[in-house]
Length: 241
Image 1: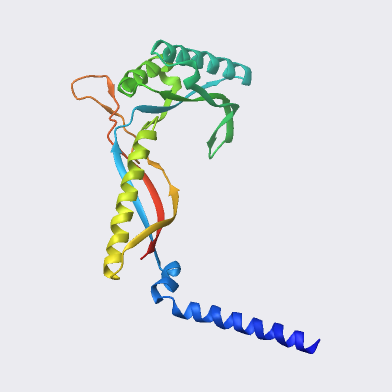
Image 2: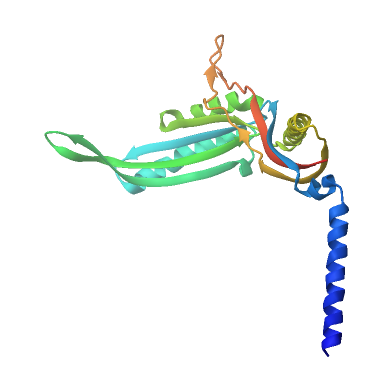
């Protein structure tokens, strides 16, 4: 029993010695390649002209009762809806954002809060897919709603950013590779295979200013579309050779 156990221990020691000898004989580069890498963050952007406009509008009416306020609001909303339809806006692109009716008060120092009526309102979000027609749609809505209508926002945006996003991705990868190659050169090494790539975000940056103005030679409303940046942010890691 003792002889057999001794032989097993000796065989194990010989095996460990051989493995250690093989590991010691490997080049230093082979032992460290797996742990040598460079990780970079990069953005890629392309400028695009918006192809659609988002219109936020609200009709609001004050009347003597809740019922009357809501009824008059519905009448004004129907006129706005009809104007949108006549301007070529599809029903699917007209969405009610809110409907409300509530008592409205006027406050004075001598009388305090005095009920002056009931205010009804209905808000709309409208997608104008033909951006060049946005100014005409705004004018039609204002004409239909009259003084009961408030325009709360006119915002150009990119309806389909898939092509622009693809181009932005290509720019992001190009920029990342240039940055990583620069680091590799500084470290006197070369880029190997890509270990991983993570897309952090692909946003469309909307302009901060509402883009609506009056043309100097006309009473027609003009919506200035401008340009927007479609940006993709990525993180890539390369192995270093």
